[in-house]
Length: 289
Image (cartoon, rainbow, N blue to C red; front, side, top):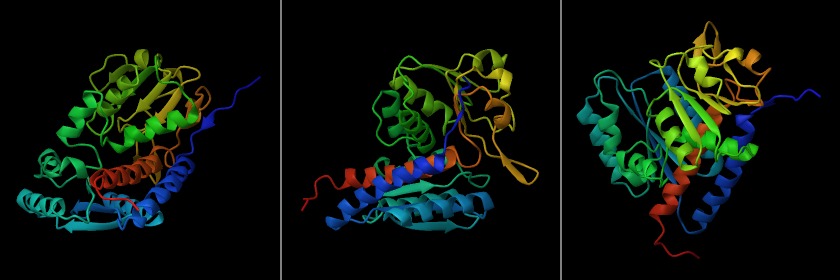
């Protein structure tokens, strides 16, 4: 009997998250609370503008009020930090998201450290990252959270699972490794300095690839029955492709995310979830009806 590969439909999973998000937003609305998300964009990067639109559209679907703060590309770090501090002080803003990348000369680390930890819906503030490493998941990075959510929905047991992550960025690789360890998985993290990448990837029951290299992972590098999450978003000609050779790897994987339509929608959905979580946390002492 031939077992068919599951194509992980990120849009469908995200839609389920939005149903729950709408209910949580309605409960807050009954208490007179409207969740507020502010995105901060510096410059006119077309890809960043597109991602911002997707996030705001998702907010409008579930009842989160959102606004986009746009700074000109010549803005200084002082300008950026001042705007973030202004958003920190506003009671109607529960979550702040700094859209990356920033123009050259601006430090994303210093800017993200300015965001109040309780409003850090991207989970990048050192306080939130530190809590994650201690096994306390407060607000965490959205892409790793989306991957964990998808695995749970697929019924994949994480305890004891062999997990290989290709890419050690602060956005995906490092926080995902910590989240997997928190769930008692066995984790290997590979990167550009890893020798014989295939030797490691062939061990993976769960393979997450976030390297930014089109077609990096070939069929012969993947264990039969693996769950494969492709986080890569690369433009090749007029197509958007991932880091995994989707057509060939689909022949051996038990489940795999497409690009686009896989991890991306899950990331946006987790942003909604975290904005609501931040709002609920900030209003814990408010009386309910």
